[in-house]
Image (cartoon, rainbow, N blue to C red; front, side):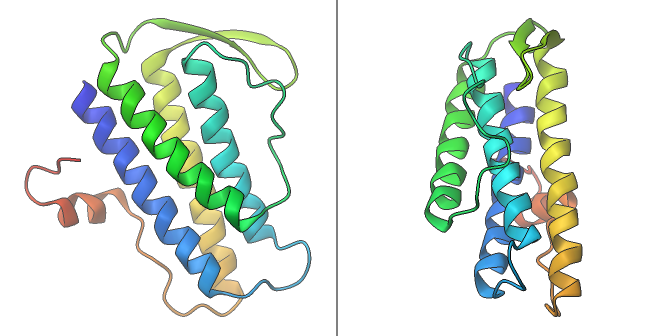
Length: 159
């Protein structure tokens, strides 16, 4: 199961990098730019989940921080490295994870379900950003489909 989740998180990293590059190439259209706000949120939420699955609190993190290029690029790399380390070492993807959300409510979910949520959350917001990029005049939106990632990686689809 490690390989499955390593592949999904490698995909997530690649797709976010493509969108971040497209955002950098597309000048902001007004303040605040909702594309950048969504990207910063996506990366911060991903980081919050990384903290939670490692037994650390995320309650001091703002889920909607002001977007800054340096922070987005740093989070992208930190998240990618952190997930790779975590997923490589993980031995029980069906263990319960107890965590608190940003409002302080406590929940328990199976790790595999949390990982699926994290990937789906990223896909959702990248799709929103793609629409906004198109609306602001970008002709060719990066292809961030999972199947395109697998085709790029070759027959094994390995990370």
